[in-house]
Image 1: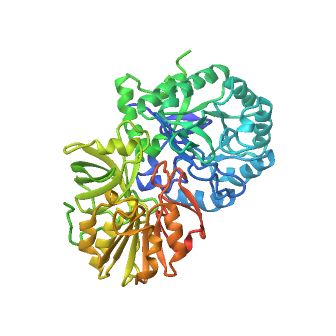
Image 2: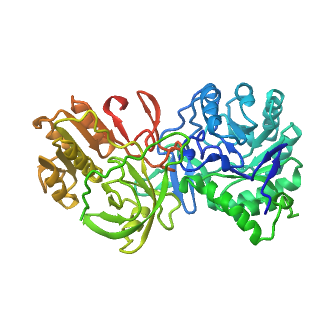
Image 3: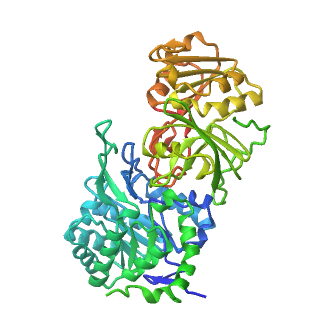
Length: 301
Length: 262
């Protein structure tokens, strides 16, 4: 028997696999495919203080080995999420829940966190959404701004606070250290990379919003490199995210320094992705002579 | 040949927190060109009957995302897809042949509703949007209704499934933009001469908007959009409706006329 459990910010996960925010809704749609209780945890759809419709369509563009999205944080607002979506999820799901919160000002972030944090096990602070203006990524590309929002939310957050970082910066370790010093309990990296496609026949960008976040298997090496750099620079745990599509990718990310691993775009291509990865994980571990997964976190120096 | 099965249809049930959705691996029986850039793929294997107006998402080798394709005809063990080459994914689909396997998920989306059953429904198709109207016509006939088909194409060489629709519909009317077949012009030009009490439409957005505005009767319209997942998790295909934001892939693709805000 192999041991797949990990400890993330004091919370025991039965395995390190988490569907990433924005690729699993509030759970109901994935639950039509498999029993969500086999997951390590779930990171629910990015939530803002007020309801948001998001950006105009088309919001999706395909790329070699990946995709762009410009959804723009569509969500029904924190009140509906806390009062309706989370209770509905909890009726049938008993593993940890991660709330992913976004805002356009520090006050919005703190108000959103206050409303939702007691309903969940962990809060993921999204300061890295590339699809909204004057918010999201604006906080994630400046060490000073990142520290301000983290320290404000940390004061009102009753749960471990994990900060989701953008790769669209020159040196991610600078932002990561600023978040750690401001009180973050963990880091999720990475969010999507800003990208663009043009429909050459129509001579127009494919996305109505022109640019969008690039994700999918193609970004895996970039995510892995950033996890490795941040693992060496910080002491807080890392949730790895970016292009994960197999159990072997999960192990590779953990070797680079991730304590848990999120699966994102792969869920869109294969609704059973997380289930299949979790089922394959013990088999891959046996092949690699790994009996306890957590002993391999960050073994690459 | 489209295999017509006798009422073996089992609608896919959507229940929250019950796993009911499945991936299917089907065998290609045939995949042939039936009109300009339009292909008809016949698939067989272990799959239930899929609801009319629902769609499947097909995995295409070398493409990152699946391709959403509407159900043209379906019964237990058999699925017919009629699709148009519009890009890389559908081009690769058209190159598949007998004996190859197709990985797909479905039936996705809500599909057309047959209740209350209209006595004389008009089915309006625009180009490749005509394809899902075949299973709808089959189901309407089976339920005791007599549909008419009005289908608009660019040219005579774009027309497909003519015999199948002729067998099922009381009347089949074609319009073509270049006048090479049927009435020259768009579908909206013949609406006033037809007698019907309800409509079902599938086609490009400008056509849907035009027929929705021109027709005083109630009806249902099937929409399309670039999709990420096809089963409701990514919010890539949302639209604003009278009832708030809806996902074309999940609450749609079929909407009642009064739900849509043009």
